[in-house]
Amino acid sequence: MPGRYFIVTPPESARNTLFPEGFNPAPVAAAFESPRYNIAPSQTAPILRVIEGELVVSDMRWGFAPRWMKDPNKAQINARSETLFEKPMFKQAATKQRCLVPTSGWYEWQPSEDGKKPWALHREGYEPFAIAGLWTVGNNKEGGPEENFLTLTTEPSAQVKPIHHRMPVILDAEGCRIWLDPGSTQDQLTALLIPWRGSLTMHRISTVVNSPKHHGPECLEEVKAWR
Image (cartoon, rainbow, N blue to C red; front, side, top):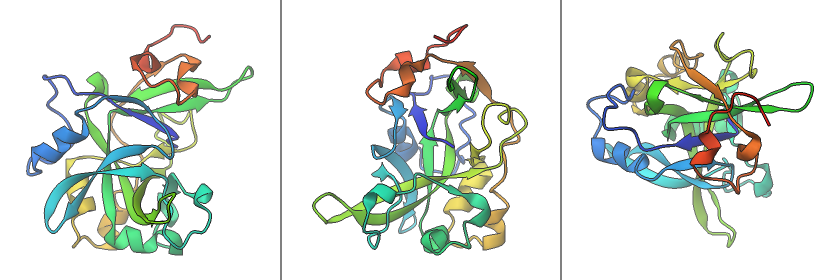
């Protein structure tokens, strides 16, 4: 999907963050400064974007709902990357309002005979990375402007496929640079929208993560058998 994801403060030993060396490190560090163990739709989370040539971190609501959308309950948390430049709802944002969604990993629920079982998927050591995203300006509860965002999904890698039929578009350092470059062509952008080719760490977690009311480190605790 993802339908939930998390941010943890990277260990001091973290080196392979998948963010370009040329990026201003301050906004990236700010995005990971406060741990968030269970980010859910409609909640506010940090995103990275370029404003007037500068990389900035902004807090936005997770749920893409342009101002013309009358029913905010129809906000989209994800968009299929395969049709990104075809659908009117996303075409303008894909052209002019791209962003990075900083994350340490995401949660997925694997169907089984006795219910869906949660997994945590992340890079080794919870190394930071970014999911390709789009942002727009929507309406807040009072009718004023409010920025919001979504994440992009693609076909699952061979590693993820047994758990779920979709996965987020993970960008490497060069991908992050191209995705945020306003001069990138559609062909360059489309080439990034592929399953992640690197390895991931996946571990089983308890159903405590099912409720967004639970947002502490217990959401990531590994279990040997589901309960």
